[in-house]
Image (cartoon, rainbow, N blue to C red; front, side, top):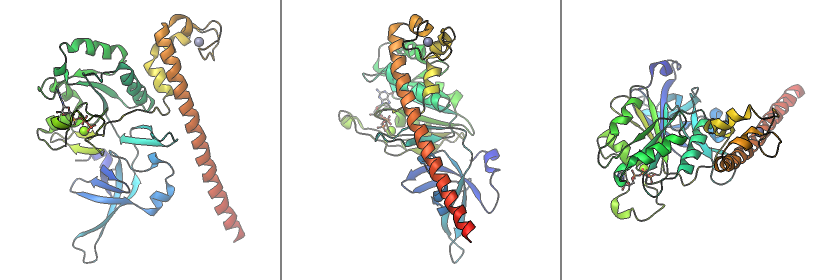
Length: 343
Ligand SMILES: Nc1nc2c(ncn2[C@@H]2O[C@H](COP(=O)(O)OP(=O)(O)OP(=O)(O)O)[C@@H](O)[C@H]2O)c(=O)[nH]1
Ligand SMILES: [Mg+2]
Ligand SMILES: [Zn+2]
């Protein structure tokens, strides 16, 4: 079911739908009554410049289904516009380019999923936290496969030590432990998404919530083949209780995009210490009287420097692209105006 306040934003002849999955230019859309394939209109395409202008999984859209000639079956379904997003999560496209790779939209909770095996890595967790904070997406940390370790408590407190406000839950789908900890995040009109490396158990967890083996998960015999992604496409799934859950393919790396705010949020003590710096515009590098450099422990300080530099570089890249898009837009407008004047 679509949230009533969102469905109310769309008036006939249009209908409200939600993007369930995407296959290149074709989308699977769900409405309150059915599920159908859809494409964006030419006008939509024309007005879209960057990847995040296009529909992504979790987006609400206004669609129109034209009847086929005999009026009986459904004809082609077109997506006319995107309804306003509450938020979206993205990473920088891995080709090193400037485009974002949007992952999911309209999230109530983004679960950063990390398994308690050899892949457990606080630095990776930190990157995800920064990325989520950078996009203003509420997040929580799901520590999976707690059956693999003797004492999950030390992992939980390590995760909590860098989690800021994000709740930390620990569970085992295999032993059905801790699954109830997910309950506060579920319910009618709630949307949650699971992101993380391949093989951490995202799809297994969703199957557990669905109480059926609907999603493909890595079978035991192929577990040794590392780097194979079992889930290959983002997919929105509905639970009977009205929750929408988005499964995503494992990510090998998370390239930060526009994450300067995210770095500041996760390194809250830097922001606090910065108020004591002698210079108001202190960059906390070589300035005299820098409270951050003087007071932060050296390990945290060098991690902050590295992440801040990366985030600032990415922001400059985005600003440059935004400026180019804006320039192209004005060029087109001016050209159209010149054409009009000539008439
Ligand atoms: N020991 C243990 N293994 C688990 C648990 N949950 C999942 N697994 C195993 O981990 C493997 C990977 O699980 P998936 O659910 O396919 O992982 P995924 O995160 O969806 O992986 P991608 O789709 O590739 O991103 C499977 O063989 C699962 O059986 C758990 O709680 N404990
Ligand atoms: Mg999966
Ligand atoms: Zn400073």
